[in-house]
Length: 364
Image (tube, one colour):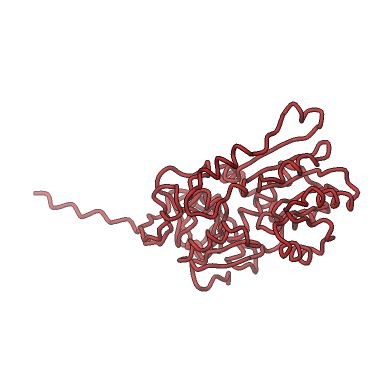
């Protein structure tokens, strides 16, 4: 008589905490839960998260206004930083305990996650986990928008919308490093003063986004002795869109990567307001662009996340151009995700917002 087969060993699951939303449509559905995480699969690495970057895309995803939002239940978050804890089969080049930057197509709002080994990058020496988590989304966005798409180079005149935000600050760093001429647009006088001091800018080249925007842009171009912008980098897509596009120089490129003007402070989408914005959105006539010799380009960075083989070279090029540590505007405890998302909705933040997965987040 055959004896009983021994029970199969249970997989070595990790119990993690994660901010999960069952279905997009309301920030109120975002809940902090505990759930099991299986071991990393072939080609994957399991990372214990120390810090998480907060982005506009996280809000849009939770509200169901982001085209790349997963169907059904998901964990938001496109970037984080932590330490390697396990490696799946076939993974080389990493060791347990390595400090890494993590790029992820959602899933970052957690204490542990499994990711494709190709989407990791070593944290630069001396950087904190918060700085590492703040870097990839906004730095890659600035690099991709300015160089591969915008073709910015030394001597280019570049308009940066929301220049005091995360992407804007990275763009300003990049433009100064390459010897271009930035013109910054910000939302308030306090942000204008802060930006002028941070980058030692000519005050005439930092413009407040208000009723005097057209006059301010013309004054900035006159101060630089330019007839138009070679590149516009824009994540606002609001009232200033037409004014900036009209001031593109011949061969100028308008690069759009977001629509912050559609952002609402509520926990649910205000569909009446969205419809109003949509119906009043700026329109372009492609035929009119031909004699003007202007170009319009738009992108969603998560597309680059899906090109895993391209990420290492893209990240290397970004770090070569934007070597400055990111500016952390505010840091929140992991349990305060709703407060962090409300802060970014407000439009009053400067720099990058971070969630701390642990009390101490230093890369040492």
